[in-house]
Length: 196
Image 1 (cartoon, rainbow, N blue to C red):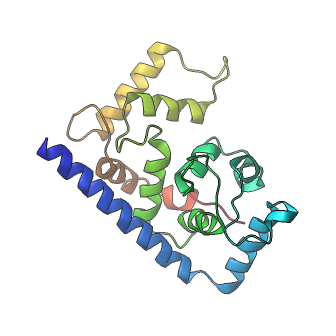
Image 2 (image 1 turned 90 degrees about the vertical axis):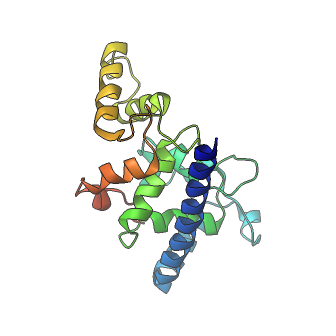
């Protein structure tokens, strides 16, 4: 029980630290980048919403952005960056800036891997378990009948992922294990980006 509390406390501290670091990255963005981001955000607003300071763009409009449209994780990305109490994936301008900052070239490996982990943690429990990994694989391979893996293939792939990533052998991948794997992937930082 103490171990669970300690793990939860570390995860929450890491989350708060990453959010602070992400906001720090925001302030490094140039004025022209912020203006460009604001222009793109306001293009997604209805005419009557443009006057509201705390306007939220619904997830349905966010995912129409060309930069997200073909991303298999587009809904999950919106859910992770949304601060909506309704958990509806809608974004404020500040949420939108956080999303762009995490996917920017100036975001660190730690920030990018932290948000990638959160995006892949579909049940938001702080670990990537077999169900999360199956959803992850299905998002990447497509869920059409001709692209979908058989049950046997999926089990074998998840077993291989856990064999490679699950250092403590608890049947899940935690954030530090995920970051360890990502640190050995040289193209992760350059491929985990969205450019407006």
